[in-house]
Length: 320
Ligand code: FAQ
Image 1 (cartoon, rainbow, N blue to C red):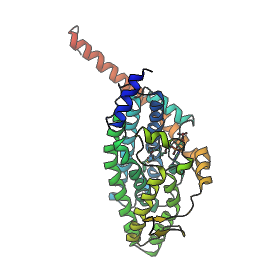
Image 2 (image 1 turned 120 degrees about the vertical axis):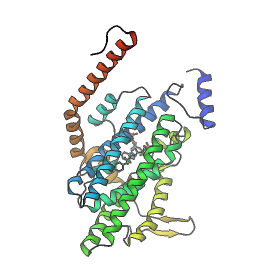
Image 3 (image 1 turned 90 degrees about the vertical axis):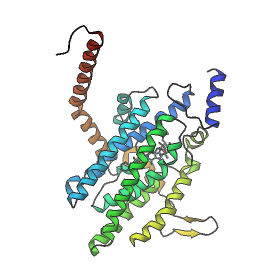
Image 4 (image 1 turned 180 degrees about the vertical axis):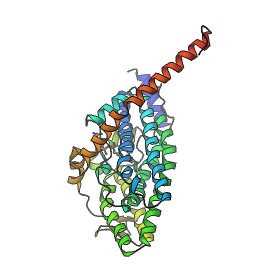
């Protein structure tokens, strides 16, 4: 490391100038980004599975078309993020291998099952809602390719959040059974959604450095609190409740106090012991193995196309 390079890097971070792939960056900064961005990409791809489960059972053509579009958007987010991660000098194959080997994490939330149609509404409202709260500040992350990818992702996530809320709103105005289904889904997804923000600040080993480098702009607890405050108001529109008896307005802090998160459950899910960890990883590995011929065909096609172009450029042989 040359100190001038480090100084230039520090200066850019101070001055809010984006770091770009060809710029010098500290090795730890690169590693921090590869970790977070690849885990984020994996979350998008694994996140397609719980909802994909309901495509064949969506209650109307409109709901089915919307859900297919949403799940397809998640695939697109995964692809932008894998591509952005590749700019840091790691290949997509390597990052996917880390996921399949169980070395790289993906969001804990996707290890829970989708038991009823109302879960699709709850995922949109709460899971996409939490994702937006966490990801809007990432549009200002110091690494250019990550920040730019997040802009489009956030726009799509807000559509996802609204479609989820609308599903719940419809159920909340339906029959008694539909109302109960709606409340049951909220009860099951509420606490895992709060866990999405990560451990409390005093147990978050990456936060401090990530904030210094302006990758993260808010701490896990700050974002979680904002999310709780927003949801308390939104759940009233649904005429439903949140499953937390300790939820209470605190006039002093200007925020809602809320109950203790079950961190034991969170760490069990991270260790691979959540309700669906095994199923999710197996589904990803199977899809990857079955898609092998597509990847090979695409690579062969691209090679052929490049050869033809080379011939065209040098005019040696006309392409037949
Ligand atoms: N699940 O020191 P920190 C979506 C890990 S949204 C699993 O606080 P950091 C959209 C963490 O990696 C979901 N692991 O870490 C969608 C670290 O382990 P490591 C994805 C978690 O990075 C919606 C350790 O705990 N969003 O996909 C979780 O500063 C609907 C210590 O934690 C993103 O990835 C967790 N919940 O803060 C798709 C956003 N929390 O790596 C389909 C980008 C923490 O040292 C349907 N990521 N860990 O071994 C971030 O903002 C951050 O990485 C945090 C964690 C906030 C998730």
